[in-house]
Image (cartoon, rainbow, N blue to C red; front, top):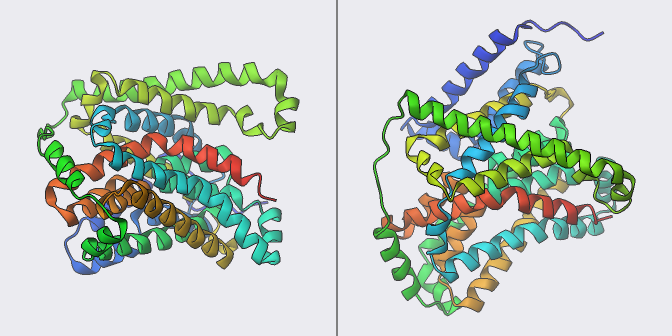
Length: 417
């Protein structure tokens, strides 16, 4: 019989998690160099997972007995996906120019194919890792990296839930993700100092950067205004109303496919029998559709902040289910992630050389995929402050593509035996 945790009331656990989340956000914004250095190597996302996991492991709370995870995954995640994708300014993204978009998409393609290729390569070199990968179904954890490297935290969490990655595996994946992606970000920033040499190697036409810079300088930069009661109610209506529609569509689609379940399992299409998969796809597609309407203007009222808060709280409820005493390292996963990143890099540089695109498009396109909205503008601003919105726009596009790209990567990974 499991031991009774110290805190069992969900209202108390909810308050505790939100206070902890606020402390993480506050310390992450402190200007002190020690805190900044700490969060450069230990992302806030990882802390949101580890701290609740530690409380669960110590018997302070119990993720298994709490219903907060069910509420967050079924209600908050679909609402966050609708809100995040509904604010994508796809028209402005398309106006960035062919080179910027093609190099960015090459990076996305490199991530989709890179994961399965890296898994196959490391498995062929290490029979021991291959046995472990098969026995423990490590692809379920690795595929969440594709979500993180294309669409960010929301896509990563969605793919975790779709394919059933265990909490013990997921926390290792988060560490692998953080180490490899942060190291590559440092390389991109370092490379900016040698952009002229890299551009010579790529035979790049730098005039394209000036064209993009002028488009961005002409791009509207309205000041965000505080949301009032009507604005907040509208944001919540869009998010949770969209989530309701997504659940309805998912139920209809799941029922439609259920008579063909045996055939779909025989042909490797079992994930499409998952109701949660269709919730995620429906929420994402609905948000993309709404981005072409006036709903997109809700971004100026803090829609992204609200949806991000939903995602981080979901991460904390997932962390509640983790038992840190059962975690062990796995260097094979690091090897897969490193090879995976190298494939992404090679594909991007090959595309840039073929298109004669400058290193700026490689750096920002890669970081928009790997780092997302948080770091892509920072990398872009290293080249010129006026170019920071390029990182924002491409990172927003990565949010739209994240779930779809992750599902494609998962399908390919399942083919690796």
